[in-house]
Length: 426
Image (cartoon, rainbow, N blue to C red; front, top):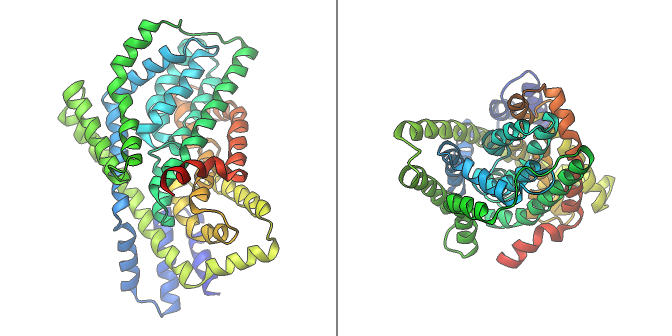
């Protein structure tokens, strides 16, 4: 009964439009008042403890690094290099879209950051070259999924903190699935090019590739610094985020001189605003998760699920369907914080590694960014492409096929996810 009060309180507040963070904390406070055995001071301590975490320091720095790269004009250098590299293929700018997202994922860490930064350049360029706006928006939205998969992924950081899992291992786990997604999307573009007659958009010129590589060489080193530093044991993920921010500042202020004090201040305030929203949600989810554990809801849920079926493949299928549905209505970061303490015990009970489940959860929830009613990535790109949200959704739907295919591969072939973490860290 007490657990029902906690869960129904949260869902009720959410249903009447109360923000997620306040719904989490509000439901917890209501439960504590009704229960009578939990002092209010304990709730405050748990909320403060939820954000008092060293790994969380990388959140504002990764956000700031990606925003500095966008504001400093570094995004255009990456795009030019991608055009010179694969623009000669059929469906040229579609291929550029995917390769550019692979590179930019090493700087943004989020799907929204990829769509708002590199994505706006890509959609406008594709429209100028005569591509169907729905196709341009569809491939750009789908390729933005590489941001949450390839390191440094902000959703994986949040999951790592919530699940008490190694962020370094989570970063390593996302590399192979992310590259598989990229290859599948490039094959999809090639199929589209053959069907609709999209040709190359640039001739392959070795000197042009060398020129754009020279112009973009320093920005392209960003993911190398982060991943190489963590892989070599020289830096932690948190230190990698600080290095990425310092490097972005160095490029924008000293090398390219595209960042002034006003631009840095504006970007910094925006990063603080985004970080503040994330931390408030995190604080609310900490007390909510603690109460779920205290009232043994997670334990009862594990027993209930296992009483229905002990088939691992079926439980994973149900989990995927559930996460896809949740992703339709709730953005990835709050959903990760809410669902991890509920679902992770079930996954561990059937022998799923927390790192493996982290990739399953993140990919599921980020696919929700491409679907209504939330679909924030589609909203952004629809405006850039000058089409309605409904048309943009129709453009995205074909690209859901390879994304769902990779999701099933990640779910049922754990070696795809666990190969690099096992090789590098275990």
